[in-house]
Image (cartoon, rainbow, N blue to C red; front, top):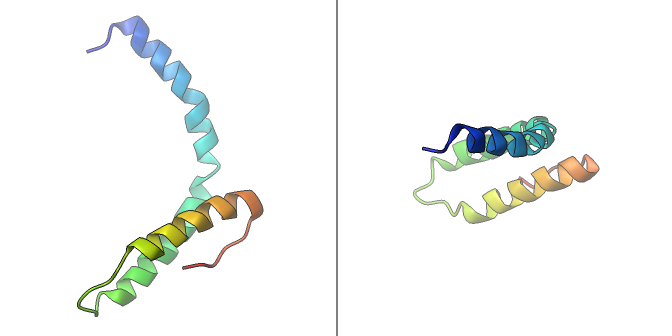
Length: 73
């Protein structure tokens, strides 16, 4: 456990980060849903490489937040 004062200090230092990440939630949810839909279509296959779709989804999330662009996955 952490002494009470240190826990409060840590929580205060994380607040700006959590506030910043709230802006990503809409973009993240939108692209995560597209990834889930893509992966659901892949369930009929015996094997699926997931590295490329996940990488593209991550890129879309970053670009979507920066430029409001989309559509790799």
